[in-house]
Image (cartoon, rainbow, N blue to C red; front, side, top):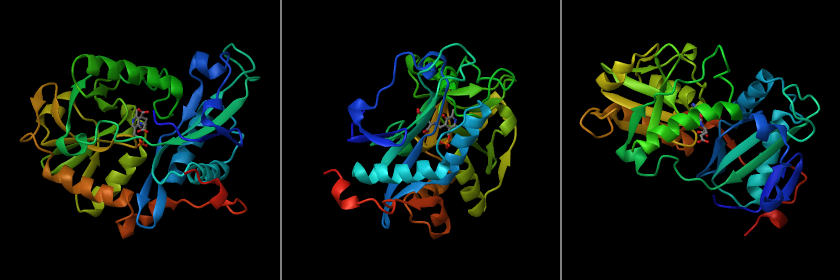
Length: 318
Ligand code: PPE
């Protein structure tokens, strides 16, 4: 992990090494945290956070689903994030806000454990490797099913939910693959361990619906809109496992991974081994949107500004 100067914690900017928590913090024991993964890109008009408001709205919803009262508003977290980026001298970054139950009491009904909030921002390259965006990855359907909506909340981006993702990811890596694809409890295709999934079948783009226990990805939404604007038909419907092998093209979307083609699933090669034409078309437009090169999607960018009343020049680290 590439270290930077400061992390924002409970309203203050603290040095990276001092952003610590007590070992009896509730979140550490039970996974009681909600978080986001957001990216800031360097655009021609300056650094910009992609769909910042949408990510913070999802953070608020995840918090609400677990009965957390966030002590900061989305706008306060947004401003703190801008200031954090500027003070750390970051022009592009992965941004990780996290709200967790801190130190106060253990036990499952821990209303005395406060909600601590942090925002960290640091350099983080393409999650599945820079070459994955062109060359594609090899995926394996996991023996682990995605957490079910009857036992947990797939729609919340909650820390504890990721134990399920970690089992799937670890299994796929140990078996020599780059990523896991999880099925839902019904046996239909759900998503990657940290990405949503799209297939191309007969020229149509298909992606699993909300009832398939997906996390409602911000990039999923962006890609659906971009693909429709490019004239493709996008259908949200249940996807059978075998369709993964029958598809002309498959790709994954997520903040950390961005848009990554899948070139092989369960040792079935897809297409002619190169990223498909439709995937490449949508990916190019998606990257234009991330980097501020697409006028029509500029509204998705939250350009980084030092909040008023803060002296930027004195605080930018070298
Ligand atoms: N599903 C899961 C399970 C998931 O974790 C992510 C994001 C997505 C779908 C895509 O969501 P979105 O980023 O809003 O398009 N995963 C985050 C964490 C990955 C990690 O390894 O940590 C991310 O991409 O930041």
